[in-house]
Length: 288
Image (cartoon, rainbow, N blue to C red; front, top):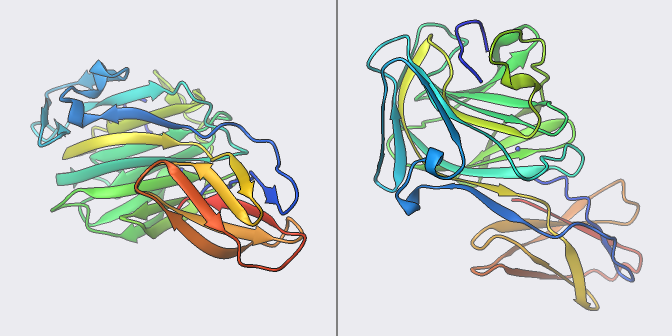
């Protein structure tokens, strides 16, 4: 974020199940941060809306529409300090659906629509969205374009999954990985207000006067790693998010992990049957 910006995550899944014992872990949680199908904007669901300049905002097509294209000096978006701990060790995933209708920028380091996700240690990532590209903001040099991916963000809603690991992030679009890189530390930013020193923080919208966009967002859901149980020998079970696909990995030494299968369910109940004969094996669940 530069001086003209107003303001302002695959689980690591270290929740292990051995063939003979269960490791303790927190309860599985899926927290709905925003749901446009309720017919209300994010500020009616616990978010703070901070506009500056001329903008248009409404709820339409089961989504919140934000348009900052009227003038080139508008900034507007929603920020929230999440109730859940965005733990940098255990990790988490943020699911969100979005569609850009249009986007313009006067700098290759800026975008009219951005997403900021900061963990409990204030490290995180800022992603910038163009109509044909998504890129990460670097922390050195600060707020310059880092890794990027060519991707069409217009025409239809895209289901994104941003997963934050201990040292890196990965972004999926409609289930396919499109962008990955290291988490960043943006605390070198000096300005007011300064969200980059705020732990457990999420922002989406237009945070720069060097870009503008018309964007629709349908919802945001925060996923924390699941807690695994073993209801019967060779069966791993957990409570998850319906219609999501989880990857199951196995290890014999807790260092090297191999994918052994996937599990999907139309309900919140998931299970995986282990077909391996290894007697001393650990399991973990990742999303996706």
